[in-house]
Structures are given as C-alpha cells and as structure tokens.
Amino acid sequence: MSQPDPDAWRTQVRQWLATVLEPARPPEPDQDADLAVFHNLPEDEERLLLERCRAYQRARFDAGYQALTLPVDKGGAGLTAAHVAAFADEESAYEVPPSTELISVTVRLVAMAVSLFGTPEQLHEHARAFLRTDLLACQLFSEPGAGSDLAALRTRARRDGDHWVIDGQKVWTSGAQFADYGLLLARTDPDVVKQAGITAFLVPMDAPGVETRPIRQMSGGASFNEVFLSGVRVPDGLRIGRPGQGWEVATTTLAFERTASGSGNRRKGGTFSDVLALARSLGRTSDPLVRQRLADLYVRAALRAATVDRVARTSAAGGRPGPEASLTKLMASDLLTRTGQVAAELMGARISADTGEPGTFAWTQHLLGAPGYRLAGGTDQIQRNLIGERVLKLPPEPRADRAPFSQLPGN
Image (cartoon, rainbow, N blue to C red; front, side, top):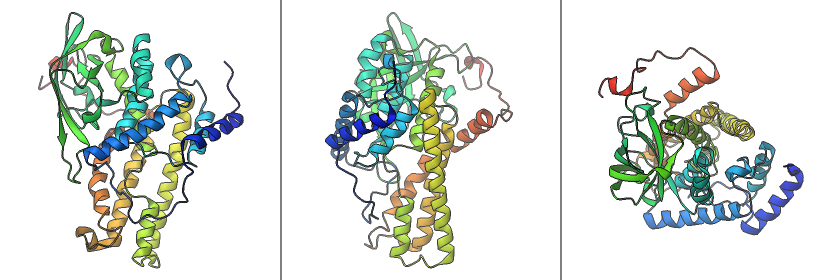
C-alpha cells in the first residue's frame, strides 16, 4: 500500500486537530503549576482526568491517527517515522489533554504488546479496545523480590484444563485501581532457566482472587498499588504469546516503557522554565553561580529533547524500540533529579516550610517524587547495564544464575 505524502498528510492532521482541540496558549511561567512527578489527585479528580484523556484518545483512534507505525494488519495505520514526526509537530500547537501513567501504559505498552504477540482474536477483542482506551490496562510485572531482576519473579501460573490458576503478588502497579485488565508475567515452568519459564497473561482486574491495595507515597499521593492474586483463574484465551514466551513479551514491552518514560506529553515535575521563573522571582539571576547552574540545566534539557526525538524516530522506523530507549529514560531521571537540586539550592530553607510564597513549597512534590523516577521503568543501574552491553557492546557482567530456576538459591 502506498504511503500518503507526509506534507499533504500533515495538512489533514492540522485540519483534524483544529476540530478536536484548542490552540496552545503561549508558554508562560506558571507559579501555580503542578510540580508533582507522579499524580497526587483524589480519586474523583483522577477519574475526571482519565475521562478527558480517553475522549481524546478515542477521537484520535477513530480518525486513524493512533499507533501510526503499527502495521495495518495489527490494528495500526502502517505509516512511517516521517508521519510520526509530522503528527507530533502539529499536535504540539494544540492543548492536548495531559496524559496519565495508566493511559500511557494502556496505549503505548499493553496495546502494543497484545498487537505484536496476540492472536487474531486478541487483536480484535483487546488490542483495538486498548488502543482506543475503551479498556484500560495496567502492568503486572514487578514483585517485592523481583524488581530490577524481573526474571526472578515468583508469581506462579499452573495449567488446569482450559484455564491457568495464578498465585502471587505484584507491586508498584500504576493505576491498578482504575484498570480493566493487567498484563501479567507469571512463572509457568520452574525447571528451565529463569527467563525461559515465564508466560504473559491478560488478567481481568475484577476476577475473583484479585485484590488491589494502594501504596501511600511520601509525597502524599497513592498512584501506585500492590496487587495480590490468590487462586485467580484465567482462561487460556487470555494468554499472550506462547507458553514460555513471556520474557520476550516483557523485554519488548519494557523497551516501549523506557521510550514512554523518557518522552510523552504529560508534565512530570518541574521544568527548566519553572526553575528560571523561580530564580527570577527570588532575584537570583544576576548571581554568576546561579546563571551557570541554569545554563547547565538548559543544555541538559535541550540534549534530552533532541535524544528523545532521535530515539523516537528510530523506534518508529523500525517498529520495536531497541536498547537505545534506555538513553531517554536515563536522561529523563537525571534531568528530574538535577532540576529539583537546582530549585532546592535556590530556595534554601524556603523549601522546608510553606511560607505562602507562590511557586516555592510546591517544589517539595518534585523533590519527593524524583527519586521514584530513578526506579520506574527500570532502575538507572539497569539502564546503564543495557547501554553498556547492548549499545556500546561492552563485555557483560558475570552471571551466576544460568541454572534452572528451581535450582537457584532461595527456590
């Protein structure tokens, strides 16, 4: 099938966006901006935000602008990286509803995993619904004893006729309380090496035996959850990929997650513009040391934006993002940390107590949330390993876990 000319297609995109969104307002420093890295909203406000996001995602899907590079037979538009860049450029001129972790996981992770590994029935029943956000999905990967070493997970799934019975615990699950399904990894064969014995499933979050408990964060919010699974019966028709193919599903999904964690249109904490506005309000912009710190922060923000664009184009052109996506994730978490540090240096004691000055004490939400972003989507240490081994082709670290999972210590 011939591709539409990107320039002519761009005009169509611009015309469509004008029918569903308002033009973007000129950027202005916002002293009342939400500086939280992770959402910290009451449940009713979170639901309202989700509905705003879903309305736009549905309109985008119905117009044919969702999953632009996904092949047509997988439910996408089958377009090129040039079309992705054109859409993003045109979209930036409009007020796009801010996304949430759950929307991003549903559309950019779970939908893509089901589209790439699912059966024709799963593509029809679930992938389309996830891409359109008719259904929302969380990610049931991490466990209390298997975070960075995800392949060491201990949640078990045993075959029982046409069903699988799942027992275990997951943790750090964003949006689980609002999700319809969870993309879950479970161990189905303990007698092979740990990566080979994992299978992926779509688990209905309202199934008997599924219990979701919110985790209260030090910033005050509860956007994460722990999920307990006790004798949860899942039909084999909700298995994603072959038995034992779960690790491939996981690594593909995590590559999409790192790309999403390093980019996306949802504001994550304070930005350079916020720090600059803070410095101006405190009368610190004439200090040469402050100017140096601001210049360093500006350069790092510009480099991250350029890297996000380059990696996004590469991923779009090739289908599945590679280990280069770790670069954007690592740069994003580093920039968040440095942004908070500069803001804290500017404020001094003001950051420890609410004096009523606008745009000051709100930075505590950023400082308390930024450390979590060094863990979300794979820790910084894991990203450095991936970059070293898979991008720079350095020798891998010694591994002592090549035996079957059942023979490893602790099992």
